[in-house]
Length: 67
Image 1 (cartoon, rainbow, N blue to C red):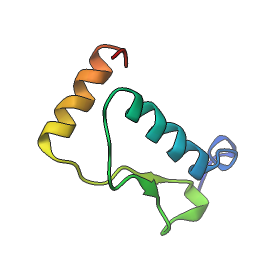
Image 2 (cartoon, one colour; image 1 turned 30 degrees about the horizontal axis):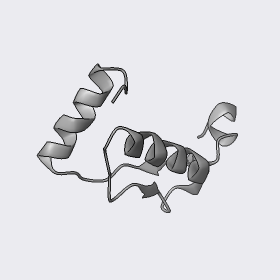
Image 3 (cartoon, rainbow, N blue to C red; image 1 turned 45 degrees about the vertical axis):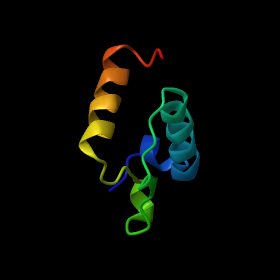
């Protein structure tokens, strides 16, 4: 069951915010989408990525998202 905090977050807005932030550091997750199977949970599905994209994401996180 979703908490009140989870229920208040629009998964589409969250997904777009994440997509934009990732794009700004050169990361594209092609499978990023709202999970249609569990609408009450407000899940964002990150999907699968190539190994080089995973490394790029890890590096972006390690440097605090600074390009």
